[in-house]
Length: 485
Ligand code: NDP
Image (cartoon, rainbow, N blue to C red; front, side):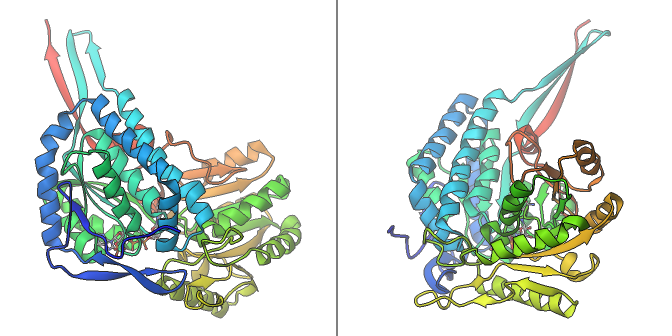
């Protein structure tokens, strides 16, 4: 279909370069479980080089007119859009997600991220205050300097650009690192930046392992802000390094999201959406609802219909049109998910469907496929209901009263998102108010307006992305007070 490079390179100071060590890491295609490309195995020396390039580029990029920055970012958005099929193909090969999903969601959203922040910067504003003592204060925004952007493997280009676009729009220059497990579309983005004529050093992409490249970005004293999306454990380690250096930190971390279903919901809409919110992208979306709570009078009906429909989902090669569930991202992640399913069994869970690796026929027999799995009969406090699995695995639990489901929904360390299904708006608002989650959906899921704040409470993160909030993150406020008596 398309040809992907068998070796990718770092993008530093506007050019493609090998890592200084000249070492490479194999990049695996999860749909066949085989190596298909090589990724630079970079380290602190490459990060240093990238940071120097970003520091050099900062004075001219940060003082470029908003209009000019808009033009560069909009051009990048156009090029992503033009190459949608190719980028979707690359994302599918690299990540195992279905081509359909990459083409419909991941790549269009990457382009939208650039377009949204290209235009947002044109409307970004400062404030001024005048008081009766005849003094004037004005507060303006200055880009913070070089920003570090580190993203995960589940929505590779989508989440990478969600950080890079606002950082560049703000006037920051960037040292960025995609997940070493899914680096291909970040490399293709660097090709696009060259094609768009982005000035050298404005964006630098360094590939390699998190504990080397990611950590070096976090530790570098000249990188003033870290925008990170990934696991809670990694976020904690990043915070422990960055906080004593007084870096600005935006952390988007894990989740264990409740999906709360009341008997008075719009049943067909709920069922269709719940299949999506449980298993889209093989359950590897931080916003998936992995704990499903169903009001007892609806429980048996929901369970039967849900299991029947999920059994019908087609797990298969991600490039095939009929496939609904693709491969999970890596062998290591597949084994982690399978061990979580084993733990659920030991904890007394009853596997209603799935629960196993699926072996496809040649040439996909070594690919990392897991059947979508539904488990019932578990206590809300057990590890399966407390720890993030991040795969095609959900639990279903009945409840009687509103207070009971609220208690169970909030009884986790995470607080990213929640979904509520009911036609009783009064109840929906009351529950939304009481839930300890940063993002709440009522009778919908994954419905995003990019102007709204995005982020989690508790161990799901610190800070908010989206809208002007993330532009504020990449800027420092400076207040100037003038006496004009
Ligand atoms: P990780 O935390 O393992 O990795 C995220 C990124 O951090 C990767 O680029 C990784 O590099 C890098 N990294 C790893 N170790 C370090 C380190 N010590 N210092 C700096 N960077 C490091 O997460 P996953 O990639 O496994 O992603 C899955 C997680 O992301 C889930 O917990 C999920 O909930 C969360 N997530 C949260 C979202 C949100 O918006 N809240 C959205 C999407 C996912 P490498 O992979 O190369 O090792």
